[in-house]
Amino acid sequence: MKQTVCVLCLFLMLLLAGERGFGQEELPQFKFHSVILQASDLKYAPRDDIIEPAVIATEGRIERPLGKYYLYYAPHDPPGGICLAYADKPEGPWHEYEANEGLIGACECDTISTITMVAMTTLTKGRPGYISDPVLDVASKQIIYAHCVASNKVFGPNGPSNPFSILTHSEDRSGASLRSTFPIGYMTTSLEMHPVKKQILFHQAKAVANSTEDRACRTKLCCVPVGDFEKLFTQWDQWGWHRVTYYGDLKEPVFDLADALGWKVVEEA
Image 1 (cartoon, rainbow, N blue to C red):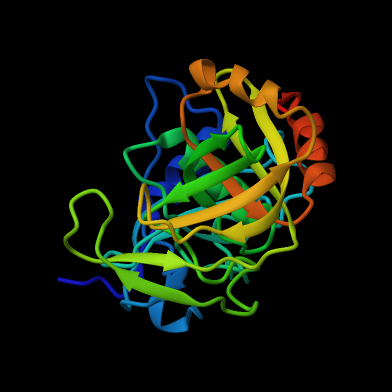
Image 2: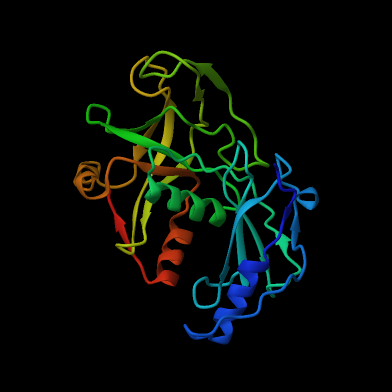
């Protein structure tokens, strides 16, 4: 049965217990406080439900946070995804993040790309990441970002839509897969964020074409890399095959984020 409210008594009391410094032998007394989020009050609640809430304190973790506490939650049914609310006190009031779409289109259990997409979609206030298996075309000195899952709103939910076609999936020639025709002439930023290494893999490229060749994945964005094309070959064995691409010149905010976290940026081009 769908739950139309998000009751966070346990999470909030555990959070308060952690702040008060309870020892292992002491347990707090739990009691109901209030309903802090209700699906019917949210702008983004595609299935009128909320599940899997998780609360964190932002102090010492996030620079210039929206509030002292972040609440991550999700719609139960498709399209699913991850959403954010924030507050200055555990009991609220809680505010829905304005760019919530809940759509994180990662695949193949790739947690590193998922982390990257969550972080960067938040940083860009809603722009979707395009996870891909890049191909390096040495003849044209282009990098081709290829995948069978792609957005048609590369500038975010309030931006313009780009054309798309619905085809079969490339590998098995069955089912349905989206071919998104991305806008050209724009700078793109591709990266991966690794919390264990405390590193951000980074390169940029200018979008120049969309390939409709009937090989490999359905969506294929062709770009000219900024920097040393040959150097792009050096990181695949250390970081894996996937990259997450965002539209826009995001070098400055990415480097600022790395500085705030104390991470290193690895420029792969």
